Image (cartoon, rainbow, N blue to C red):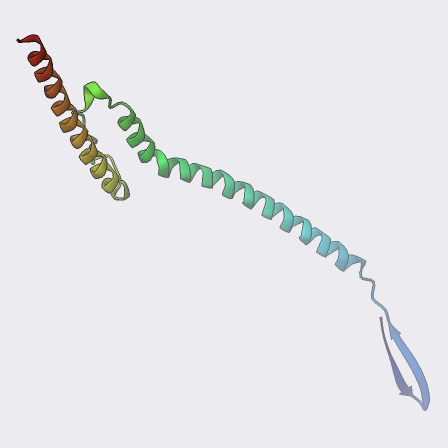
Amino acid sequence: MAWRYVEHDGQSLLMIAVKLLALREQMLAAYRLKLLLTLAVGALMAFVLGGWVSRRALQPLRALGSKAESIDVRRLHVRLHKADLPQELQGLQHSLNQMLARLEAGFTQLSRFSEDLAQEVRTP
């Protein structure tokens, strides 16, 4: 609502202008609804795509873990190959292979010691 005093033909008049805001409020309500729906759909898409990207990005790490889980005392000679790993995991793969080599050497040394000890006990 707006008003103004104006002079017309020597008379002082009060001019009042009124505009209904119902149409603008309806338009803003429609925009607000569209914005909320777009935000909800965007958040859902971000959630789904984030899950997919994280699964895909962690797949080489899961493969490395399953390969490492398959190594036991009888398979200490098995090494992890770097051909199927991204560059970020090749350092981990190298460290695991070095650890496996040390374990294999220690286990071999312990086995020889046990065999030698058994031989010494059997012979007078």
